[in-house]
Length: 421
Image (cartoon, rainbow, N blue to C red; front, side, top):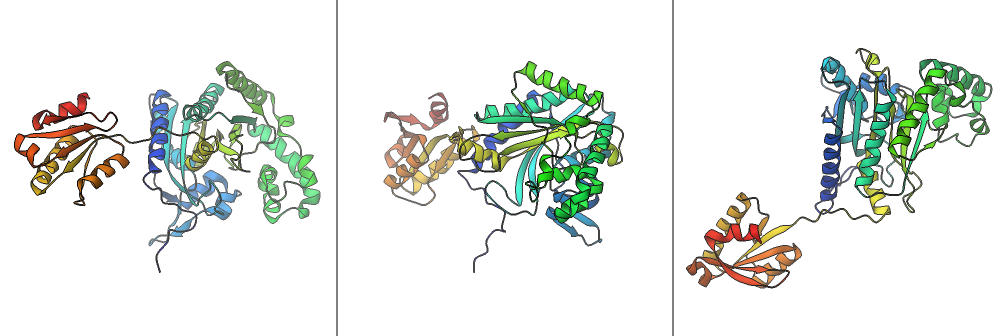
C-alpha cells in the first residue's frame, strides 16, 4: 500500500510552484516599496499565545488548532494564523524601542487549521500578511488596505470588492456588547451551543455564526454603527476620506465581523466577484488590533494588518483566466554525439551555468533526435550540437530554435555568443 499525503494538504509540483514563486516575488517587491520588512516566526508557539492573542471564544482556538505536548509536557500549537506570533516577537524583541516607528513587517509561510477541506481551503495553507505596529492614525489603516488591493491588482485581478466596517473602540464595544446580550439572551436557547457559550463573553461572535445566520434575531440585532462614540465615528470617517483620496472604491458593511477576538476599529475584507470563483468569496481579511501588545505582556502599541491565502489567490486568478508570466527560459540545450563529445558537453554546460546562463544537457544517453525533441519541449532558445568533427575543430554547432539559423561557434566564444544573441 502506497503512502499518501494527509487529508487537507497538497504537493506543489514543478509547473505550479513557479506561480507561487512569482506571487511571492511580486509581494516582496511591493512590500519593499511600502517599507515593510520581512519577519519569520516559528511554525509552532506556546498554546497560550493563541488562546490569549486570538481569543478562546473563536472557532480557531476551540475547534481548529493542532495542539500537542512536547517531551517536557509543554502545550504547543502549530500556528493557525500569523498576527499573534508577529506581535509576540514585536514584544519579546522590544521592537517598540526602535527608532523608526511604526514597525512595518510582512510574513509569508504555512499555517495550520483542522477544518473541513474544500476548494481553496486546506489544513496546511500558506498565508501572506503584513502588520504595522505602533501607530493609531487612520492613514496607516488606509495604507495597509491599499497595499492589499495593490497586490491583487498587480497580479491582474479586476473582479474585486473592498468591504469595510468599524468595530469601534473599547467604550463603543462595551455598549454594543450589552445591547447584544439583552437582544439575544431571552431566546439564546434557540441558538447553537457555541453561540450560547459566547453570549456573555463575546456576543459579537454570534453575528458571525454560520449555523444560526438565518435566525430571525440576527436580522434585528443591534448594529454596532449605532453604538460608535464620537471618537470611533471620526476615526472611521477619516479612514473613508483617505481611501477616497487614494481612489480606492469600497463599500461599508455594518454586518462585517472579523472572526478573531483582537479586532477593534477598522475591519475589512477583499472579495472576488469573479463568476465561478465559488460560494466563499473572501480573498483577504484584516483589521486593527489595538490592545493585543498589552495582552501579550508588552506596552501599548496599536496595530493593523491583514492576511491572505495564496491558495485562494491562485483560485481567483484561475477564475479570471489570468496567466502569470512564469515560463522559465532555457538559454541553451547541449546535445552530445558520442562519449568524447559528452565529456566536452559536461564541461560546456557547467561553464554556461557558471556564467548565469540557463543550460541543460541530456543525461539519458538518447539519440540526437530524442535530445532535440527534449530541447523543444523545454522551449530552449538555442540547441548546441557537438559531434566528432566539431570536437576536433574546437567548435560547436549552435542552432536558433525560433529562426532555424545555425552556425559554428568556437568553444572559447560560446558563452559570449549565447549572452549576446
